Length: 156
Image 1: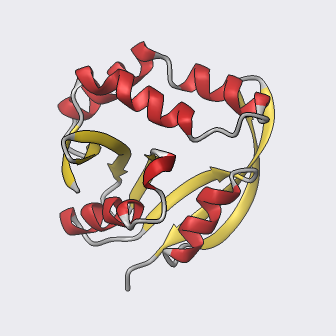
Image 2: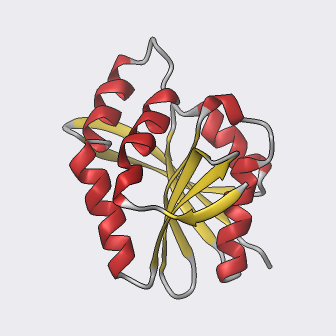
């Protein structure tokens, strides 16, 4: 898989990948994701990462097709992973782990991420990648209460 910095022209592909990860029967998550992945929001996030040295918004390509993306911030002593999505057709092939390895190759340091407690697939993936649960919090996300799981990976 080839990794490169995302560009605004990738926004539609990024949105499609994020929305493809939602199961059809999860209407609450669908509404939240449609709001979170509005075209203008994705372009804004890509543009801000282009301007800030500590932000990385990268896409992964397989056979010249964008199949996933990762958005992370280097907080100085840890990575804060904001998003990591892989198109479902490419799950279980090591591509998600490749995104994590790519960040660690930039700077080896702990990683933290917050995941919706209902996102079983993401939680299972992260636990398989040696992330550990730190705690659970309740947050308002798009005017709805949501339980988030705080996970942390320590490379040392």
